[in-house]
Image (cartoon, rainbow, N blue to C red):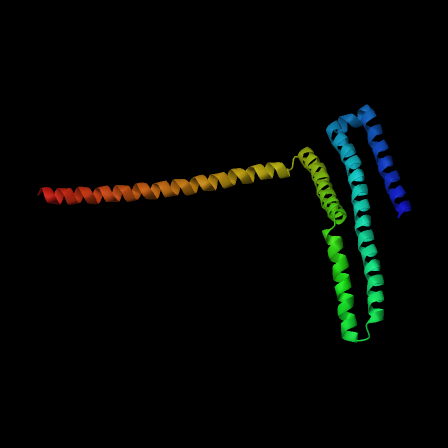
Length: 190
């Protein structure tokens, strides 16, 4: 696993070196906007850092599960050695595993590891979304933030239209009511 991580980091370093070189060559600067290069470089660094954190947290997660499983197996084997009835032994095995894993799941360390995994994964998605947003903008495509803005405006317009429709309905009812009152008053006046 360590060898794969080294190869990954080497390839990231090579890509970053290439981006730094491109930034220094005036001919490339004319064709590639510097902002795209800078964002890509920053995103790769961020992506690498977050990926390493995520991989570390996932490894710790599985280490905790394995250690708990081994400890539960050890305790269950000791308990089962005392029990001769197969059904009672099975229940004892289940109880030991349930107790050990409940302790693990309630532990602060396990909670921190799961939180780190969730946070790192969300950061990874955010990093990727940032890169995509810059490239979409550079290509003249609508970005997610622009689409979100359009969606918010559309929701606001739908709400405004619904409010106007309600107001028109109330005004029509008011006009009909006044018309009926005028007819009724005219009839009384005769």
